[in-house]
View 1 (cartoon, one colour):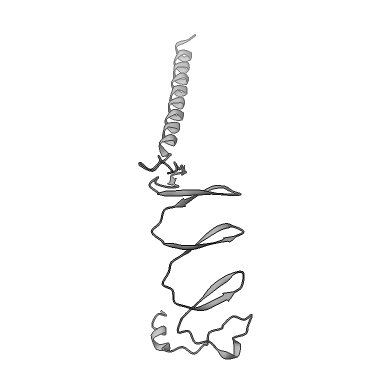
View 2 (cartoon, rainbow, N blue to C red):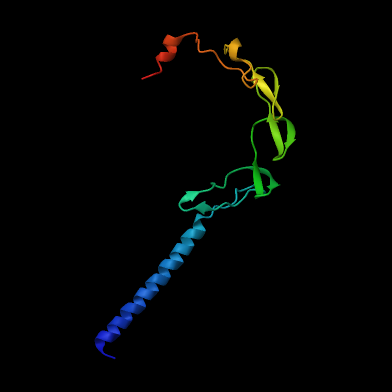
Length: 149
């Protein structure tokens, strides 16, 4: 083996070692991207990252999970007050306490609240699919035009 061949062989060997080291480094970085479970919460999920974007920081408070056709989905703890639930094809759905003023219910695909507002309804067109249509007459057009550039 000539000196030149020996040097080429040594260079090739060094390149292979560098490639192996880079692969190991990338694997380590990928493992570091996995977030750890939130401390102190036994039901917290360890979530991964997608590319360089985290799916979660791992500090979410998980209340529980529910099973769907797509797999288990987390239920996050929240400060919202659940006053009731109702069952749909998608499963149990919460009804949260709110201070939204209502004047009645509309029954289309289930009971839906009718919110109280100052909207003026045009009597001529109120039966279009039994849905109200607001009048084009507005109270203060000058104020609203101030928002247009």
